Amino acid sequence: MSDVFADLVGQDEAVVELRRAAAAAAAVLRAGAADRAPALITAGPASGAEFAGPAGGAEFAGPAGGAEFAEVDGGAAVDGVDPAAGMTHAWIFTGPPGSGRSVAARAFAAALQCVHGTGCGECPGCRTTMGGTHADVRLVVPEGLSIGVGEMRALVLRAASTPSGGRWQVVVIEDADRLTEAAGNALLKAIEEPPPRTVFLLCAPSTHPDDISVTIRSRCRVVPLRQPPADAVAEVLVRRDGIAPDVAQWAAAAAQGHVGRARRLARDPEARKRREAVLAVPRRLTGVGAAFDAASALIEAAEAEAEASVTEADTTERAALETALGAGGTGRGAAGAMRGAAGQLKELEKRQKSRATRAQRDALDRALVDLAGFYRDALTMALRAPVAPVHTDTAALAGAGAQKWDAEGSLRRLEAVLACRAAIEANVKPRIAVEAMMLALWKG
Ligand SMILES: [Zn+2]
Image (tube, rainbow, N blue to C red):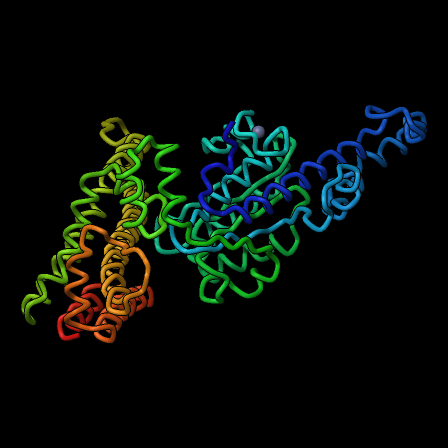
């Protein structure tokens, strides 16, 4: 009943476009199959080639029979699919965090692997893709702050192989804005001369040159996603996660359109506690000392949250590597093996440190988004704008702030939070950026 696009909340236009493209892609495969084995499909004039000896056979088995996208039009016409909505080799899904960029990319990947070509959600192609086990779908989820050239080259190489399931090789790159320049160039080469059955799905916040290089952008079709409305987010929390409607409504508003965050707030008491601590910040800013204390508290809370999220994975990985390297061995050669192993352990530690840094940044950014929501509430109240508050539970406090600061003071504070986010994004040391923000919030 619910297909692979069901969880893509509030993105009706994008879903229509992706369904069309999936249908066109399926038509390409059918056209390709018909070209390669005409005798199997119909006994028309083409079947004469069957008797024309090896030369004729080779003609159909050759590259000309491959499913090039140039055939989209022909295949599409046969199936009554709009040729203009045809398939493309490279896509970029853009939108604010939580809008569902990676959800959209995965759903589209599933629709491409779907045996019905629709993303039915039921067939093995859909299920294995959504479960992350499809042999022809590679998912790149950067754990550190960037995606390196080595990783990208290996990926491009594997993506060029023939799909084992007979449909498409799909490469999903989450956070494509984290590609290093060299990695971007490696990817660009693959996108410029794509193997006939390979599809690249990139996710990035926007198509701004800071996020994605102009040359990559120019080779991709862009699917813009928007911040889903709170009602749509609440609806999916109720339907899919079985969350009570009033809790879902509150969480959807508090998460400001971020679906994953809304689900966490609705389900995880720790996440709710951390949010409450962040929203207590405006009340606590009573002086310079208090501002610095608040900055420390915010940074330390982000560190603690990040540590909780990566510690388990770190321990498991280290244990697995040590087992693979034969740690604890006492036989001849064990000491030498351990010396070589030290290099691999160091490499693992480096990767884990990079992942921890990323987790800290993400946790801090979530806190800043919550804080921005509070000052946005104060601003809309000062302006008497007819919009619902982001944080219903601190609306009274925001109202008091609105009276005290007026619209101008509320706006300055909101801008201080946004400036802090931008500074951290631009690699300013988080503690320095947060301290500057707290002082600005206190002074106004
Ligand atoms: Zn399916």
